[in-house]
Every structure is written in structure tokens, then in C-alpha cells.
Length: 497
Ligand SMILES: [Zn+2]
Image 1 (cartoon, rainbow, N blue to C red):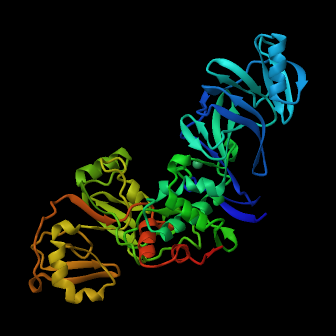
Image 2: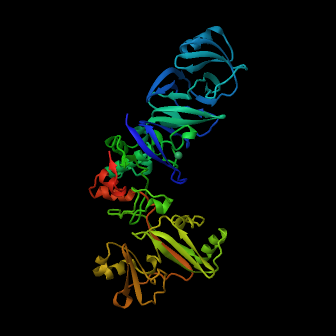
């Protein structure tokens, strides 16, 4: 068995700790989206095996049949009598003895008895009762939670899963846990994270990132009785209905591959698109990781482009809701960027003070507005709406080589403050700085002048920006890069093995 040393990271809570665990080819996935603390679990199969998992193998001890199988927590006591080796002989005994209000009870592998439900006696912490419709069929009351498996798949509340389903009882409710091989888990994850029609090398990069991410999160939900959950909190997992052939190929072709930094499996975070460059982990979550450093995009050709417009009145209202008083807003400007011009601070200057939004607050400050938080921190103030971008780019084409890539063209003053078009200069913002041009020497077309007391933000990218850009991975794959090259590009100084 391989051994992993890994970091467990709660991305938002940012609690960090080192753990050492044995290699875990099996993953316990809490099915929070379909069966979380419910009073009854419906099983879609007409026939299920009851048993116990050991080292990834399921040992069946009974086959239960019914047309409307369901499981409920059992909290009332029962009186036990008799010793049987299996479900069939316990059932046969019940049939012959005409006992009423009694069912076979599973006490462990090859350990069965008869439970009289009329009252009295004790009940174990893991005890549940299986019904067919409203007829009780059996009780499971052993040191393990009830584990069930259908023939091809197990259908829980209408959703199909591979592997084994464990019904985890806590207090008077049940949560379903899918005990599954990590590779089969990834079959149901990757298509929820990236479109299955994308280039195979991008899908392989995503599969390897998702595998590493899952391994790095294994202790996250320990107190709930499972490793990871099936929601966006960990990674969206849809079971068999989330599977696609291309994804299965990507998972199979990267089987067991993980991303390591300094011999530790990394927390392989990813996001949709950066709009030009990725972010440092410390600029987003406050904690630095050597493998989560900013990199410039080389093939991210389809980053989301967006524009947001806010009146100073709207911004004043957000400030007052947060009990911040800076008087009347006079100006709003970008006051700090990282080395690739991703915004790390936005200053709102008022007549009686200023408010500086730092790091992710730059995005989340706007969360209460109709459009919600900003999509990314890769933006400029002013926006392409003030000048026709294509005409200006044509006019500037002979100078464009001065910039690695032109980002946006807009009319602004040197502090990025939008100016009326009567200004004599135009500032062109590129990836590596800005340059002033005289309006008289180039032809520009005015589309729209930004009104006074209005903040227009034009941005590119979507997501927190840390780690791998999915659209960047797509572009790199289409340009001929392998999944290992993609991963080593976005995660600094890592090995894939
Ligand atoms: Zn989770």
C-alpha cells in the first residue's frame, strides 16, 4: 500500500493541519445532496445484498427482496431469541413458529437472531430496520452501520451509485454514504467540473487535479462519518448519472496519478478562467503555498468577459449597510495589483475618509448587488464601452507589439479614473503596464461616455483564480500540451506520479 502524507485544507475555513494516512483506494462519500439526515431512505432495487466491506471487498451475508424497500432508524428496543447462521434459516424458523411482530436481526457476519418488536430490551447505536412498503423485513443491529449493494448498482432515493452504500445513523436520522473506489468516484465527478466534450488532455488534467484534491481532503468530514461530501463544498459527485465515456477514459488513462509538491499530495484547487493570470493563494485566502503562485496564461482563449456598472449611490448604500462612513464618494481607483495586474486593492475615496477593499473583499463587497460579487479580480476601471475597442486597436496596431497582449482600451486619466472624451490623451492598458497616446494622432470612435458618479468595471475571468484555470487547460490541450505539462504549468514545481 502506498502511503500519503497530505495537507488537509478547508479552503474557506482555512484550517491547516498535517495528517498521515494509509493509502486509501476506497473513498467514503457522504451523499448530502440526496440523503442527508432523513427519516427514511428509499431503495430503488428489488433485490439487495446486506453485508460488510473489508479492504474494499464487499462480503454479502444476505439477499433481501421487495418491491418498495426502505430503511428507517430503529430506536425502540426489542427482545432477542435464538441463534442462526443466516437470514434464510432465521426467516424459515419465523415462518414455521407463527411468531408475530418478529423479524430476523443481523448482528454481524453469520450472526443472526430473532427480534420480537413488541417492546422491551435494548437497541444498538447503529440499529436500523428494513421494510418492504410498511412490512418490516429485518433489523440490522451490529457494530457496523448497515451496508447494502444492488446487483449492478444501488439506487438510493432514485439515484444510481456504484460501490456499496452505507446507511450512517446518527441520532434519529440516516445519511447515505457511498463507499467507492476513488477511480469510480472520479467517473461521477469530472463531468460536473468540466464539460465532457473538452479535449482529452484537459479532461485528464481535471481528473488528476480532482483525484489529488479528494486525497488532500480525506479528513475533512471525519466527524460526520465520511471523507468527502458530494456537493460543491468538496466536489460535486453525481454517481452513475454523472458519468460520461470521455471522462471515464480520462480517469482510466491517469489511474492513480497524483500531484505532489515536496512529496506531499497537493490541494489541487482550480477555477473556470483567470482572464490573463492566476492568483497567489495568499492573495485570496491569506495563506501562502509554494505551488499556488501566479502564472500568466498562455492559451486561455475563451475567458469570460464581463462589465459591471455601479452608481456611487449604490456603493454608498453598501458602505452604510456595513456601518462605514467616508462622506460623499469622490473617486474609486485600483490602488494595488499583483505582478500581473490582478487587482489586490480597490480604494473608495470619500470626502471624510476612504475605504480600501483588500483581496477577495474586492469581489465580495458587491455581493449584495443584483449581479452579485465580481466574477474575478482581473479587471480595469473604465471599460471598453468608452471607446470603440476594435477601431482603437487597429489604430494602435503598429504600437501593439510594445505589450505582450493588449487587455483593454479606454479613456481614462493616469489613475484609471474615467475621463470625458474631450481629454487629449488615451491610456492603453496592457498586461505589463499602460501607455499614453495623443488622441489627435489616432482615430478613435466614441461609443459611450461614462456618466459622472458611476463606476464601470470591465473584467475577464471567472472564479477565485488560484491553481489551474480550466479554460486555460482547454486552450493548452488544444495547442498540443499534455495533461502533465498543463498541471506542471499551473501548479509550481510539482511532480505528477
Ligand atoms: Zn464537503
